[in-house]
Image (cartoon, rainbow, N blue to C red; front, side, top):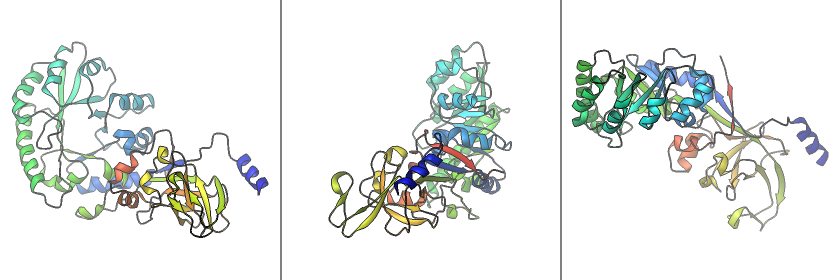
Length: 386
């Protein structure tokens, strides 16, 4: 047995990672097309902020670089902007997170627009003297998180019109309750929005982009005065397509794989992991994988979650507490289990017990609350390329 283990490790490259996140290009583009067809009167702007919801900022942007029907890529920060340009991504970018006015004024990166959410930022940008700044003005229409209040609109219009280096490329806002089966509040927001859009269109006839809805808001696109819709969770196949009409076929884009790193037998009466939370009732085979909560495996999956082991993808329970870099599995049902055997930690099949959808239900959270926790250092590999 020891000789077999040594032979296996010798075969593995020094640089071959133990954990790989597979990102399906075919599935990503399938999801994009679904939403493009749902609202043909809107162009779809992919949201790749927060490391593309955990899928890999540069990897997802590289796939979308070829999609010329998308007006811009939506990111959160100046850091993400620089990371994409350093990686050779040339598509237009919209930064929707807060960036300090002094950084905006010094930014000399081409094809980047900034979202302005306060009247104070507009005043601070009044000192710009050397370059044109493209901005999207965010208006608060009821989410009350950020954005200019409607009564500040006349003042903001005056500030923009009086500054020849501030170019209003677009206006934006956000629907706060678009996933609710009761559409009443969303329709109230849309009514406010449409009135605001009319004012801006009259004042800035050259304004290029008008966008309100994100993934859930696509089902209201026929009611919204806009020409762009943002697409975040729906892009990654993280949303139930049943709420849309017609029903959308959502395909999860991500799959995480690793290998078994140790195998042993435990006898009745023994326990596993920190705080001895799993007690062995009869002799079992256990295995470890090099994935813990640092790698994004939620501790709420302790004695609760599953992974798929071996070529037959046999569901095996996570037993004991999920540790920082290790999870322990009950592999008693896996024939000929051994070190190096493949393990699917996250499945891209929605019906599997370790799909993002299934995990989010076990953890009582939303799907993207799971995916954004997969750290950037994990190797992402694009598969199913056209």
